[in-house]
Amino acid sequence: MFADFFDEAPVTEGQLPDNIDTMYTLKSPPLDLGPSGKIRTLRKQIQEVTGDGRLTAVPVQEEHILFQDSMYLCTHVYDDARGVRHTNVYLWAGNGVAEPTLEDVQLFAKNHARQNQGTLLVIRQGQETPNFFEALGGIVITRRGAKPAAKEFMLCGRRHLGHLAFDEVDFSLKSLCSAFPYLVSTSAGKVFLWKGRGCSAEELSGARLMGMDLAPTGDYNEIDEGAEPPSFLNNTFPPPQVPAKGPAIPRSADHWRYKATSDKYRVRLYKIEQTTGQPAGWGQALQVSSSFFAPLLRRPSWNAAEQRPQTPLTPKTPQGVVKTEVKEIMPFSQRDLEPENVYVLDAFFEMYM
Image 1: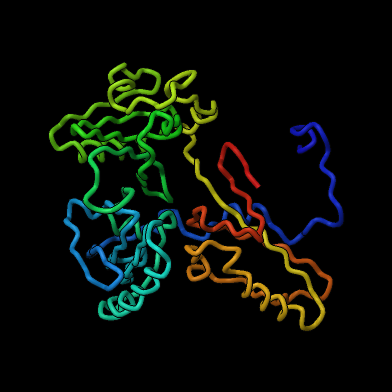
Image 2: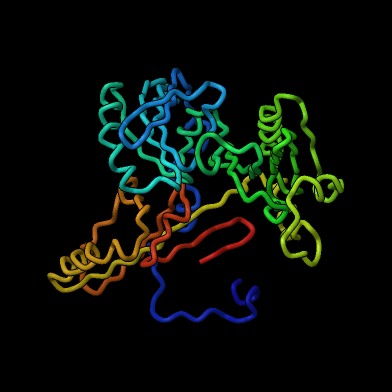
């Protein structure tokens, strides 16, 4: 199969690992995304929190809007599929929050969780779990900066583990991609919904709901890809400093038009790890070395180790035996990519390694 696709047969050195069950890995995601994973929200409270622990109530109509320079405490009481009651206290931090600031507020967040008899879960922007989205109503908007927010902005909508996420992107025609719906809000209060050819019915419905919510005056318009009026192209966006050659909206990859009819469309990230049996003492030396160089290899905002169980550094396999493991990371963001490991990104229509 590889030879037919790449026009040459693959060449491998040594024996391929025989302990990887591909089908089991594909059919066993870390999170339950089926009907059995559904929960029922009983009570929720969302508050903005500062580094010194000061809390500010978030208006009910804005509970689904987060800002990347801010932190939030979300207390969520819910019943799981079996009817068991749980209380989670989420500490959400945007990408603009420095790691020391997030660490400082965690002591206050732990006390808050203890007072509510709940479990504290720290979440970075882009790594939101399905239950967190459920706590915020199923549709979450992430804006750049902090309050007060500018009226002129652009949101890209996408499916996220059974829910919908709208992330702020550059206010430019170059941000448009056929795969998604976009909400464009102007300084004059107009709201446009640009519908890419590949956006799903679920994404389109969510974008319409958010678009009408963002346009309280009713100045809301829908635009199909390829049928943009001149007023949208020329009057809504600032003119480019350098005249661009070609179309104002960049051409998207052809495969995106199939996304609308691909019910199983999903992006998945896999981490490939190998451990080898080594002489006594080698594992300890590796652990010391890794601890020393870790701050240099990872960005300061990296905190995936706090969220996920780690593989022991000391190999458990017999000396000389190579053990290969494939672990799916869910949810994931670019922050999960470590320079010392190998990853496979399954982007449905494309594959990256």
